[in-house]
Image (cartoon, chains in turn cyan, yellow):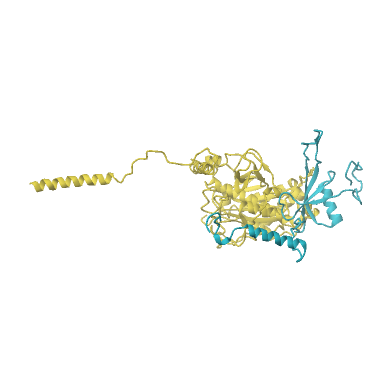
Length: 154
Length: 414
């Protein structure tokens, strides 16, 4: 199997099964835009792949048990225009929704977790941060006044 | 004299006072019409008023047919639920759509039935073996079955013949069967609403809409009776089990939407006297056969197909029966509706019993509704091991006994 324009040999009744040992396909695991059930994994695959190809690919190469695969083609819009006012097409792509077998689940991981930055004591960032905090505290009103402004009174 | 006149005057005035008192408590007729929310505004109170008016119209419908017509008058996009589906784990999704608790096994057998005990199985066994051998061996079927028509070739006529002969043989023991109606490939339809969602496309974008479902089912055979079967458990019984809650849209099942006629049908029209259900017999289609699922590495989905079929078909049938009696989601059932089903693929049989305790599945009606529908179901077991030539090897009497007990089920007064 290969992506791009490839002519597959015609199958006639009695031929042996077509076997490909080094496929030219690549699959991209993506984070689903809409929340999917726990056993569903979303891939972007080549336009020439079929759901049977996806199932065999995952089972034979990656040993992932697959129950069912559903595919759809996402049309890339052709509305944007470049500086020459020509229409610029976003490429079409095929999406596969793979439901895992044997009760397995998958959740797309959070690749960029927010880190709490704790600067080392004595470094430049630490002094800067402390200075900014002091400034902010000086600007805020005295909490003992209970929100009352200070342009009248003592 | 003056005293008498005064007394007479006092008495007359007393009478006048009494008449005024009897007239005074009546409130004066209202000068202005009642202040209610608008009927056509784009506001929540107007929507509520239109809903109230709709509920009132359905409630006051003069006949059942008119009530069904008004209930399903508005057509919108709805999810079409197929009882016989290839979707994975469809039984959990269907339980959440129909608020059903699935209890493995069969319902607790009530007090001993009033009729005679276990019937003679040898006669019924010979009837079953006759039907089996007729289709598998004796009848020479010249045409090979076309693609995906194998179930119609042998198992379908076998099932039909089996049910017809068993029903006829047991008619003497169960007088309800004698007055029953047997349908071949009837239609069973039901339309309901459950849950709410936001409309995402079209001119109604942003509005909150109920999620609509429709089941269009075609059981192989169906037995309808004029009297309701007895309940398995009381109406307010708290079942040990939970209705699965699934927080995804039904599209992920996958389930697809269509807009067409909202039909509610039990197999016969409203005027038919046999308006209660007894037993349904379903045949698993070719695409969901055991061998195909095993080849596709989906062995755990074999039982799921039976369960999903049982839950969806029986819910549709019992709920349609309830609507034929005048109940609907705003007027919940006052007595449980009970039906049975046998689902088979020709060799393996699975038995299901369903008790409908509540029709109130919409968001508004379900707020304080502790009742849940209950579905009991067994695993699929083979009726026979193999058919070799002239005889049947390994006939399983338990399955036949269970089938006979299903057919002999009847209300106590009969």
